[in-house]
Length: 386
Image (cartoon, rainbow, N blue to C red; front, side, top):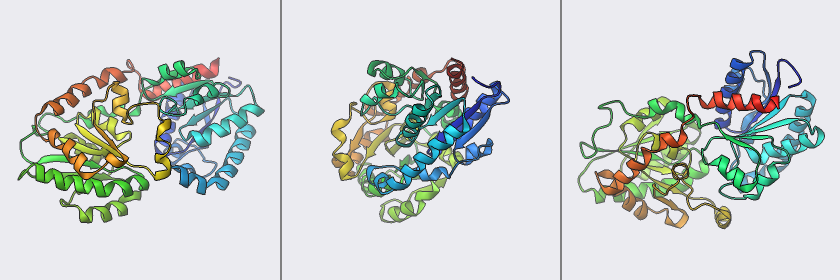
């Protein structure tokens, strides 16, 4: 490091990255109290003192078509950010998620400043598709901080940069996800507590609300007269879509807001119907058996042949087995989803198999005493010191 008090340039592109960035800033300051930070982030990183170069929301774009529509402005922001990184002369550049943006900045900055330490916090999904990216990253990434325990081996296999598992932030919240004694009724006693999680992005919600509603209707028929209590945790920016979508559902869900209410619902739940994503790992940590579904645009569907994994469910990937059933694209229908959900409504072999798999997840994600933010800060400072 060139300064006793290092200057670190951080770039986060999504809400989840903003939370990781804020935790990393706190943990680095705990080790190096004079550390300074500049870059791009959201409200959590702003709360730690970061003055964002421009609003992080400009980078929160998902899907091929939305990215193409915003391409000219994104290219301008890439150029602006690269110039800002070089002007700041930081000791390190830390990229947090959003690789389509952050990696372009890193490549350009590294060409101008070959000695710049570059750390990638949250590995791109090289283990799932475009595996050739891993080897290319060696030219401009010094170290990858991985959230998933299987990712270091994937980078080693693919010829990627050095990679260390620093833990997923969810493992700091297991006590909030798991029920206290008596909080979750035994399966079969009283109503079936069913969580419905159609996603946090508009594209996910718009594609999943109809098949999820149909699945709930078919599940009610399959369970005869048993009562089903639906809970749907929602984030504010998709709430209008959700409220419109549930009007046609055969059972009206209780819509809850905020992390505290969401985790309370997890602690009560017997089963879940969920969009593929990080929420599947939350459900596994909470020991809630689930059925997972996903739909993408027709254009994105044509790229499915590029996938190099046989499951898109994060909890399955962490466990190293297909413990959770998933239904994608044409298979994501009311009848298929209901048929997979019905066995989870009682003490069946299908339900017990998922619960047995979830019992192994803590060992798979263990960090040995450090928190994820502490591990990320340690590896970041070690990499800078080299």
